Image (cartoon, rainbow, N blue to C red; front, side, top):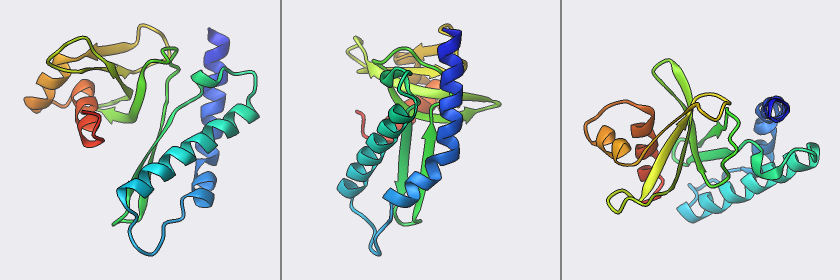
Length: 166
């Protein structure tokens, strides 16, 4: 496990160093603001290019455990926000939402389908490489968001709403 975590850290460092070059090549914004469909397709395709590039560069590392990248394109401001997964995550069923700071800690935020009929997703906030370094909740995330608390789960809930997850 320790070996995988160390490899993950090396791959993430490579990705952080080279992601801007990849974006310069693939995300050239046209003169008119792109539509939501164009942004969605570009983000998906650039994510595939990044994943394939990492897999080719680091072929011995499991493809499903490579660091995830999320893009948020602001066409009116002509900016691209890039979130790169910071912490090793073995659970391939989790969908990466973002990497963000809440308070003084950094978190990787995820979601997956929930069995709770009132809140269809469970949200996760990972703050370290170890398996135990996770905060999770479904109703808790919704309640914290509604009451205006600034917690990792409420931020994950908010991002999921903004991205149209539910």
